Length: 178
Image 1 (cartoon, rainbow, N blue to C red):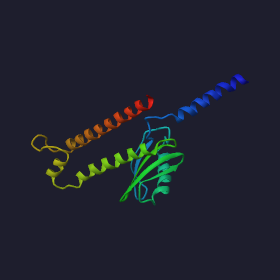
Image 2: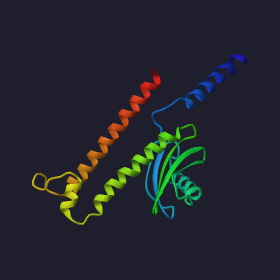
Image 3: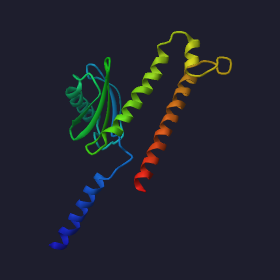
Image 4: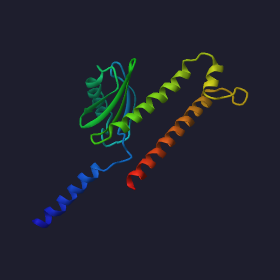
């Protein structure tokens, strides 16, 4: 009987240790809700966390109900998850991590998301096409303005930001592992 319980205890201990190890996959989910708690955008990176749309929406409703009265950036713990969030006018931005996750890392992701969207949406507020072209660093004579070209430029800028974040994560990982 001792031989059977030892491997199980070892396996459980190994799993517990593995769950506490630092991971580069810090973000479990990102979502944006309106001031009524309705989903505008969501991305769940951990598909096992809330596998169905119904579970995701229930989780989002729970988070919204606990956080919608705040006027500032805050941290919440809901259903065993660390959640950092920011409210701006009538939108709520959420970044979700595990209970052991570093809140500062999650807040850095939240701030990057918020600032990136703020910059992109400022362009949309322009009604003069030449101003839009200037703001996205295009020259009308070199690149004809089209929805696809503007979208491609924005996608390229977001991909560059993503590459910078990935590089920073790698540097952090290697500095921790030294």
